[in-house]
Length: 196
Length: 407
Image 1 (spheres, rainbow over the protein chains, first blue to last red):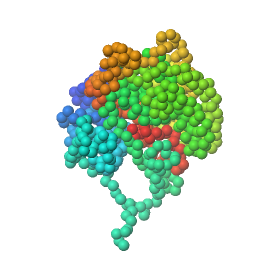
Image 2: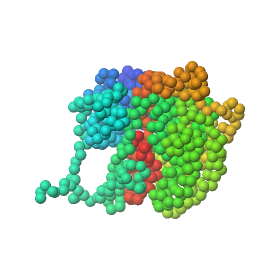
Image 3: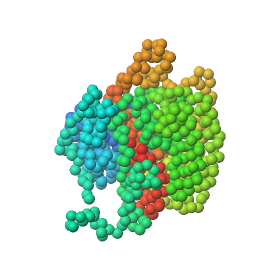
Image 4: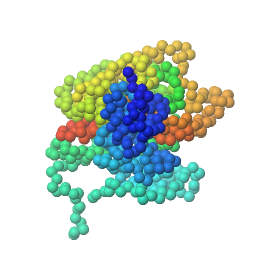
């Protein structure tokens, strides 16, 4: 018998009662939330349970919702049960001023670089990660670029002169927002200092 | 003179291993990625990967662009098989918008995607040959990759970064020249593939270079998030085309080749077999396309007025077409609210798109699930204890494309 979303939801609520919330099925994929302290418990439960068997981590990414106060940064896990071919999405939310989340690398080795990428883009600190440093951006970057307050172009660059392309210089074109990038203390990246 | 002392890293005098820097610009690394190897003589003790040399901030850019302007970004993910990325993106948009494409569009998409898969596997396999010293195979199959490029060019105008297709279908119908070239490819290529396999498959030097090198068990591969030919070489028959069929793949008959040990030789063989399977699928799709007659044979897109530009004659004569044309070009169409994850079987594995929309004109968040990025983490485990030359072969047999790794 195939594993249905209803069965998964039933098993989760049996185990975690009302700690798992926000059950939705956008485009057929069961999506739910849990408090961030329980992320490993939920992931382990989904992995070990013989009926659920979500043993493949398809994707791990972050999203920034600046409007959800106290829950701005979100980590989204996409899991896949390969035998019954069921996918599931699991979200946790964390406070942007203290974005600590337990790492999933103990359970899934593929989470290693995916968490580094989420740290690099959003600044979520994965507690217990073996090597949490920037992966795609330069090591010297001291802000987390995918957060919504940062514009598309890096305003701190001094080596580009785009005046001939209609940007910058003394001519201000309407749609370009010049954001004063003043960094909050908590955003300064002190991990990964260069040792010579 | 004390200020001119060179400061060496900690413990570098007592160290007994050699540090070798492989990359980022190196003839053996296909794309820019760096590997810092710790060698004990010629044996690898540990490796450390540095990527991000071609990081172009696609996910941030995508938050500022309407849907059809994101297609050129997806081209540049796995640039050896860019039509697959484009089609994957269009399928994601269609899932979000609830668009159903007609069968002829699906079959044409299958033809294009399988051609892209063949071209991607050809590059990977011939480069494994080049890295083990055999240059001939690479040049020999390049001639047929050129033919594939010419087929793309007939449809969309570009060869490498194709930007092929639109939300709902294609930008133009496939003309007769495209079908002739496709027929020529289907007629001539099997003989070439046979000759390519003759060069390598039972070649003693190649077998000794690749058998037992970079092996991985199925459990470790699943834990590392492997998908695609690398996972199938380890013995797991997971293929997105069969498990979550998209674009009418369920109408086609094909097998999933699997290996046993997951080493470089198995990966090579799995890719070769997949080329044969793809040729079969293209043949079936071509026959099915030719069965459409009359008005059905002219269908090349679904009816998506919000995202598909109307015909130019209609724009000049009808009011609705004029309004749609204006709204599409100026980017004033709002997307439905929702979040969708959709994936396709790319050349390297499951290429996924996670799209979150808040009802605006551009995505709120777009994340690419890139197979190369995920399985490159396993490189250390694959090469621990093997020789330096094995590291080169493993890197090329994994089919690492820097564009897909860094996005």
